[in-house]
Image (cartoon, rainbow, N blue to C red; front, side):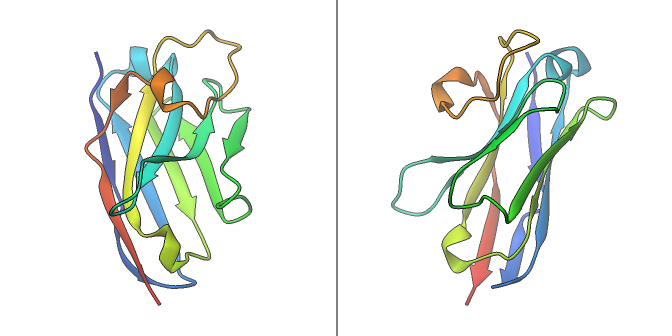
Length: 129
């Protein structure tokens, strides 16, 4: 079991930046998990944003955020991050951190939400135009 807690959301103007953090309660589980970020805007389905492998060497991004967002992790701090730059109003959503704790060491990051077994409560990101 692991609890995930997101922070860093808020209100920002278009073109601005935010850095989301995801803290995990279990170092054991966190270090063995692929980590992902997803988001859900009002009236829309949850969508994949980004994912990072267990060792942080592999990342994957949704096309809509590629070049603007950067995912990272610090296994010593049990934390994952999402640096969001050049924010757009369409980035407005609740952002969720998720962990796929069943991934093997060499597994690639996954975009499939069904592969993630632990989820945070989410943090609101609002981008004004």
